[in-house]
Amino acid sequence: MSAAGPPQGARPPGGERRGAPVGGDHASATAAERLERRVAIDALPDYRERIDVRSPAEYAIDHIPGAASHPVLDNEERTRIGTMHACDSAFAARQAGAAIVARNIAAMLEGAFRDKPRDWAPLVYCWRGGQRSRSLTHVLNEIGWRAVQLAGGYRAYRRNVVGLLATVPGRFDYRVVCGLTGSGKSRLIAALADEGAQVLDLERIARHRGSLLGDLPVDPQPTQKAFESGLVAVLQQLEPTRPVYVESESKRIGTVQLPESLLAAMRGAPCIRLELPRALRIELLKAEYAHFLVDPAALAARLLRLVPLHGKKAVEQWTDAAKAGDWDRVIAELLDLHYDPAYTRSIGRNFPRIADAVTVAPAAATDDAFRALAREIDAEDRLRVTV
Image (cartoon, rainbow, N blue to C red; front, side, top):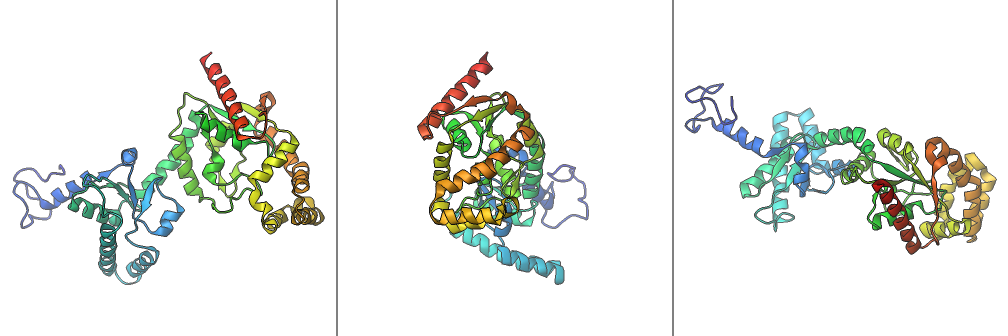
């Protein structure tokens, strides 16, 4: 039976409804309208404006990139309606929930959506493509906007992300930038991006520098799901015909973990060894971790994690030197006794092609020098691909 209604003259299932239009069932027509307003996950790129109507807590865990949060039920309201559904009745919960949703949608129309143009066509989604997103989609379309509902909601999006992570990372030809801590790997990745090369900046997506001290002071890390959403969004913008530069990361960057498919592709890729004199590494690290220079107590708290490896006495000496402002000594000893030995042990094990790596070095530890090096590296890679 088609969505337009039963065949001419047939009796609709359950009996004919009063007021049904001649030649079709009103309920079936309404269902058809709903279907027309639903789009599958593969249509997501067609809708740049995206509305997440889930609660703020759900949105904070993860959301579709670019989606704005406009909850039809906030955290407390969602909990209250859920409790009512479980302990009272589904009918009472729907009745109370509908009143709250109506008020919240009215606030959106009078606020955030007030100046939207007549041809506005947002994509709306909730957890599974149910009543929360359907409610807002219906109201927006009744006004005259061309809103659509994402079929399956965030759950369908998340399944798609998991599926893509299993296959997409293996499509690319990576160049892994390796080097000791403070050699400027992140700066080279940024310079390559500035020069038009393709990069996968994992530390930017993870919002972490990938070391014991790598937390960014005012930018907390994303959840694992949000990290994976950001990773997929970047991977989908890359071209498989061009090389992709990526830093030699371990399996975990702070609190987030790289997918196995990406790790496997990176660990089998050719490497570029970046070198910088020790004195310049110290200067570069002082610039990149300047927040510790003005807050030695924060550094002392992080260094406590090294007690099992280096002993309480060594950590106390580093802490005292930091309090005294002897940063060159602190950084030099951390490099010599902790970071360099750990990196040397792990790099050959995790990136076996480091043995055949091309060694490069900037003329100085400046942005201009790193950009010049980036131009040289990318030009050689382009020539190699052409040949």
